[in-house]
Image 1 (cartoon, helix red, strand yellow):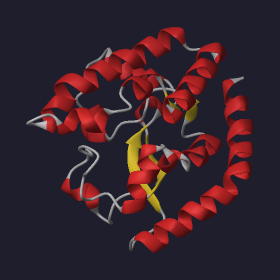
Image 2 (spheres, rainbow, N blue to C red; image 1 turned 135 degrees about the horizontal axis):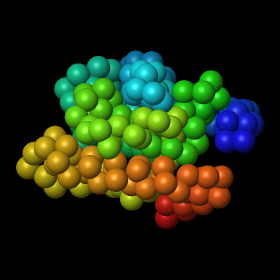
Image 3 (cartoon, helix red, strand yellow; image 1 turned 30 degrees about the vertical axis):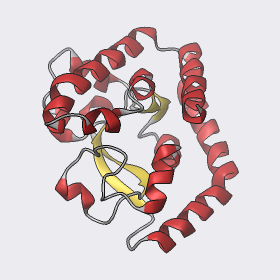
Length: 195
C-alpha cells in the first residue's frame, strides 16, 4: 500500500511540478557555474548506498570542505541556494528517488556513510525502512543549520547531540509507522515550510 502511494504520488508530483523544475533549473544555471543537480551517496534501506538527488544550492565541490551546512550564511551556498533551502525546494528532485524506490515520502532521513558508521545496534534499526523525504526529525530539526551555527564545534554537536536525538525520533516513527502517521507527517511538513 505504501509503495503504491509513493509511486502514484511521486509520479503525479513530478508531472505537476515540471514547470517549477524548469524554472528552478534556469535560475541555478544563471546564478552560478556547475550542474543543476547535486548527487550524494547516502545510506538507504538494508544499509545499501544510493545517490540522493537535490537541486544544487552550493558552489561545486563544496561538500569537500565539510558535510554539514552551518548557519544561514554559509558562504558556500549560492544566492538562489538560500531561497531554495529556506523553502525546502532543493529537496523536490527526491521525488525521483521516491519513484524509483530508493526512498519513500515518509521515513527516516538518509544519512551519509560517515555518520551511519557511528550508529549503535539499536540505531541501525532505522535502516530497516526506506528512507524518507520527511519524518519526525525533519520537522523537529528544520532549523538544524542554525543550531549548528551556535556551536563552537558543529561536528561534535551534530555527532553527540543532534544525531542521537534525530535517531530517537526515527525509532519512534518505526513504532508508529502507518498510512495515517505518514499523511499526518506530510501535512505537518507542509505547514512547517509555510510557517
